[in-house]
Length: 134
Image 1: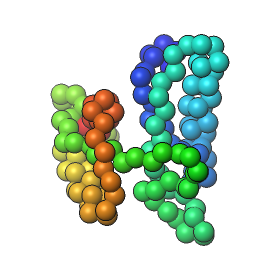
Image 2: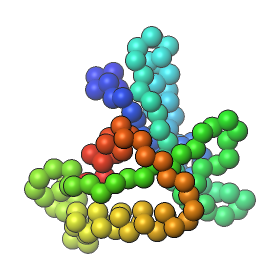
Image 3: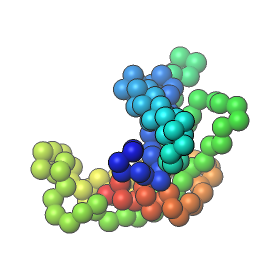
Image 4: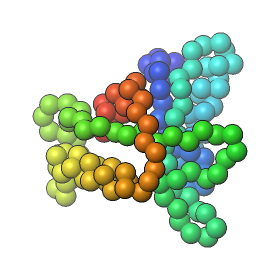
């Protein structure tokens, strides 16, 4: 973070869903805390839903309840491939192409939109996310 100086960092929430996710959340928040402590610019941290245990059942597409935390859903718009040419996972995976992956994400977003969630468009965040959803 100190070298790249991103404006926004996307990470997992600390919710006990997977130890790697929790470790990533810890590392991101710790790094941002160190930057703030040293009076250096720290990026905005946005947490993405993953999965966690809620009353004995796996819960996906939602956060654990946390008083005072603002929750937003950001609508991702259609995006082009992240770069021209073959995607890295297309080289090693014969199961899915980049075009199929993008089609699946559009279908998933359409399905999620039917769940009566409120979708908010935040242009700066959407642009940053579009670069990463290829």
